Picture 1 (cartoon, chains in turn yellow, blue):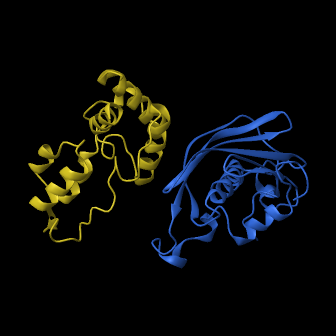
Picture 2 (cartoon, rainbow over the protein chains, first blue to last red):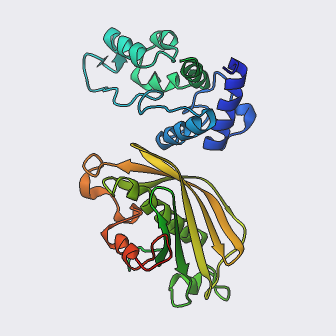
Picture 3 (cartoon, one colour):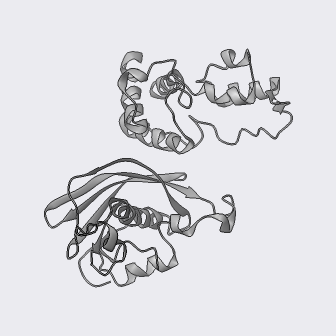
Length: 129
Length: 161
């Protein structure tokens, strides 16, 4: 079982390859979309590379959940994620910092959940399983 | 004009590897202006040929049940060029194939000379989810017409298929 630092280094290499960013841009707090310029298709590329670099299988939607339905009024109301929506996110993304997001749960802030740290958390759990 | 940037498959090892060739000829109109006095196969069309080779390889994994579209070229390096009279040999190796899409590592050679190498990522698109007819067909790395190329190619054994 690699240490958290070792996992971070591998995640960093993965993101450097997938997103064409510099090493020093990949900090634990960096957001994939905002700071590292990832677009939707990059998430697929990132999953491919994580699987290869860590020799694990990552089922569809496990790291980056799909189909969080912003049109479902029980999950999102007036552009804000509801308590039920937050519970859903916690359930689907135990590797993400939902507490931080809950402080300002606007729908457009959901993408800020996708940080380098989130991937490291995910890989740490995955490798421990 | 048909958007075919490979002429024939020479090897097709389903789910693993495919090799296709593209003969570059001066009768191709784009070479007349690219460039005046120095006809050279546009790098973008080499990428398209590599993507068609790799896209068909990926498509074959699920017997072409998915629409495969070129999603991303994470890495592509050009080392030399191809001119009229050259035969480009495109090789694609499948490095990833799953529900959402796949990835190939590709290489273009003229004889023993490396022209380009890199990686290509494809996404599977449900044509209904993508709006049916709204997808530009040119984006598809394979179509029914393209599949016909395999009929005149050769199987992995080198025997006519």
